[in-house]
Image (tube, rainbow, N blue to C red; front, side):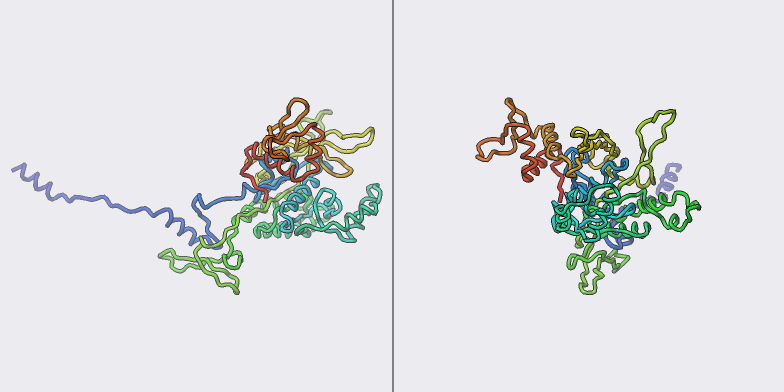
Length: 451
């Protein structure tokens, strides 16, 4: 009897089943997120559809510096150059401008943000930047030279300055600092510039400082506050640009068709177009705007007749410092003299912050000659190519480049004499560019593109 009761009790027990449910697929989650928040384009994409422009670089033309920065300044990022007065920060910026013009031609589009002073167009031309000059610019240049105790321009120099044809577009941002920085955000979002130069962070004048009398103390850390806000906003400006596949208009608009079914589409706001389609059908542009920021320095005070560490430090908003992809610190070297006359100066540089393939801690130097204003890039290219094995030295003063054929095509290129080889590099731009490409490949930067 007891056994039967137990059996009945067991029979009365209800069998409970575990509830099962199906997790949403990653694709449905992505679509739901993009439907809710992707107002101008998807904010979540699979890894194989997400990319940036880190393979696109903006070289300076100085091979040693370009190799240390991973092939040049990264496109779509912010970079900083700091150093003492007169070290050549502006010269280097105009070199970067000139290299963009050389590669892009009439498609080049450059901009200069002037917090410190006006754009010295004559100086820019001397640095290799092709920028148009007006009669007023020429008069201003002459006045500046007179104040500096320099001789007036010769007729030949005036003709050369006025006849310099501008290559591509060159725009200048001037005005109240806050307005200018907001304008720069819009300019970066538009993705039309290869390089925007900012000269310089430490010379910007905020509205609070401008309104204050000379005997008043304006808001503490006013410039740093503005720079911090800008640094946070600029990250959004570097996001991909989504354009209409029919007319190229940007930004697009999102239209939700059915919330329950997660159906939505993108629409072109251009009244003359009317395109409608799925997000993946829109054209996607990766932002390729590089920002070159000049940062002034403050001298350290000597303590007990001794200066600890470097002779200067770079201050400013920490947000800007963290924002930098590559930071280059420039230091004074020795003057180069011909007898007692100074003909140039040595510029030492150090990569003090490095991402995207740049080499942190890398150092180097180049000589900036005064008349004409130029860097001996031919010798720099020769030295770097020899280090990498692109150029090989054979007995008898013969130099061989195995990857380049000679004119007859029956062997590797050879030339006798170091000076003769350097002169060829300086004289033949195609030969120079070929050596640079080989150096990039040897340095494992074969993936890098410059246009």
